[in-house]
Amino acid sequence: MVTLLKLTENDKRLIIVLLLLVILVFVIAGYIGILVKKIMDKQGKKMDDLIHDVVVAGVITDRKHLIRFGIKKNHRQLFKDAWLPFSIMAFASFIIILYCIIYQNWNPSFLSDYESTGFNTLFFVFDWKNAPRSTFFGKEIISGWPTLLSKPHFSWKAWGAYLFFPGMIGGALWFLICIQAYIARTIRLFKKSKEVFSKSLENYNVNEVSNTPQNPIQ
Amino acid sequence: MAEFFKTLLKGVIYVVLLPFILLVWVLSAIYCVFIFLYSAIKNMIIFFAGGNPMGDLPEDVKAKKILTERLIQPQPSFIPTAAAPTPAVSVEGSPAPTAESLRPTFVTETSDEVLNRQEEQDQGGDDDGNFTQTY
Image (cartoon, rainbow over all chains, first blue to last red; front, side):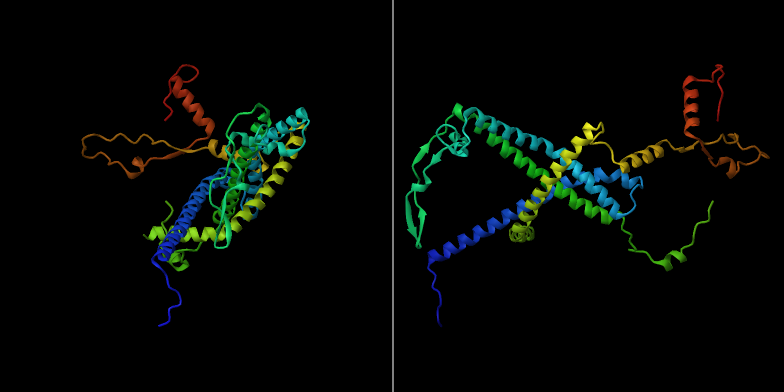
């Protein structure tokens, strides 16, 4: 018998560990997906609220009209949801422009300055470029902690960055949630527009109906 | 165990579809930004023209009208008519209560009539102070 590959005990352990890691990643991805789907289902319920009255009152009686109406309502809802995160981002942009005007510094590199004017004055900053490296399977990878360039500290000169970054990141994340809600409502609209006006002949038999004795009208 | 494998399979599907999901998300984000800016400009114009940018759409107005009308439409009220008094003890020769006399009747009232009746009942009589048994 020809053995193509000989695995040592260590190799087998490594393969098992890698396999378990891959399974773990997929399971975590699965749970994240399930969570996102549940959140989107909840967000999509808002569409029911938006189109309920017109359907129940019989104002809209066909699918195309319902979709057109739903899209209009969805755009309005998006505006209602997104004006606040947009305002936050606009305010953050205004702050940074004001900062640039005050300090007459239009070079955006001041935002990444870890010594006095950047947002990363609040974090540990490492010298990753000059980190110790070793060769591993022909590739150079980092093999140790790099030197620390800066410790977290508060700098008054960085007030612009302190207001700009949280505002932009917070606003952008909030806006992403609004987009997710928008997508969820759109999906719900198309799903419901099919269901609401669908006619079903399930369990309907014309012979059974004609043979059923009708109750005389009292 | 089956649940675990289901989750694992879903995870694999989500990982495979992740680039497409992200693509849809990014395209939606761009579309939403345009929609937001368009809505903002449109709403501003409507607002400065003296209108209500977040007011009801024509379909909403119609639906509200129909639903309100349905609420105040005359409801059939169940008012049992006074059945012929039947003696507690059966007396020979007295007529037995007919099915007709025992059957409750439905009287259709308009909303105004219902309101007037309720007012009279609240006041305990009519305008002249005479109490009248309506039914």
